[in-house]
Image (cartoon, rainbow, N blue to C red; front, side, top):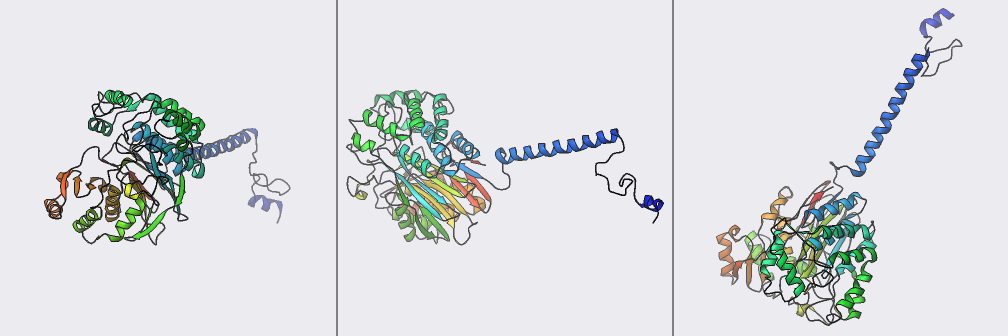
Length: 495
């Protein structure tokens, strides 16, 4: 083939005079070279910018397809702080600790530094779960137990958490500095505990201030609380318990206070209605729940409710009050925390350090106490239900401050279609004690069921406010929904 033929089939813009292929960015003149460089530069800048935007979205953006975590609690700000912790790289334990601490500031009548509680941490991928037991312990007082709240949360952070303890406490300090937003629940509790019934001067003064506020208004945090929280943030529980042993030496034995340690125990599991029920170990509402489930008749709604009421008919337990938090994360770690002061406002004693002491020993559970070295028996019920035979099946994370409420809640959740899970909020629950049944939203109870209860020897009345709350996270496959109990003032978030 001669040179003319070669030139016909090979453009001079592609091959040089030796027949070799030129560089892909070959240009005949300087203008073309400048244009090509500009195009290449623009493409490089565009790609780098796109990569940066993608990385920022992955780290901070809203995950629309697969939820990366949920926080459900009794306060909007506390749930948001829990979500913020997940965004910072924390896990479900970190988020739960943050929300529980925050709740203790904004809802001090139901939980706080002077209280106790129990936590269940469950790894769905491995099927392994543990109970962190920070129930109060006995000391020298016949009503007040040694609080375990701070020790338990700190232990959970050390064992399971990712973020530093100080990071988890900081939101609570900031909220205390801004003041407490008065909730309907706090006002209802204040009206139930008028200043005439409160003997402690610190609490009487603070409640008199709260009573002048309306829902949504701000009230100053109790004196001493900000200083106490700051010390807890910097020093953990050690300094907190040292200060408590000095301040309360006439109430609790200093050695009992300083030596307090939380416990870690395996969870209890039992199959029920095609679910594996996961709950806390001995000394809590967990074993009581499993015993009731093994006996309950769940073939008919009214029969089931009557069977449940009869299960608790002989129990003279006082109502356990408290708060509940549910959290999940991208690693399928599920957490539910129950914390409380015993009853609403606990012992009605507000310490100079800004927290209310519990009345855990005054719950009529003495028949469950073996001896003075045992922890105080609690009715707290953290509960997780996992559909059996399907790792991506339905999962429910919730709980209640009192096992009698928690059992009703669990049965309602399991019998409600996953698509209608939000309707669980509207199902009335009962306060049970001996033959007395106090009913929430009594207008929602049918005449037939009321007559059934009366014919079986139950005394009916209307439940007093504030109603106990339970917050729920439901997961199915990669979908999840979190919602706070409509009985309270909370709000839940999904990341």
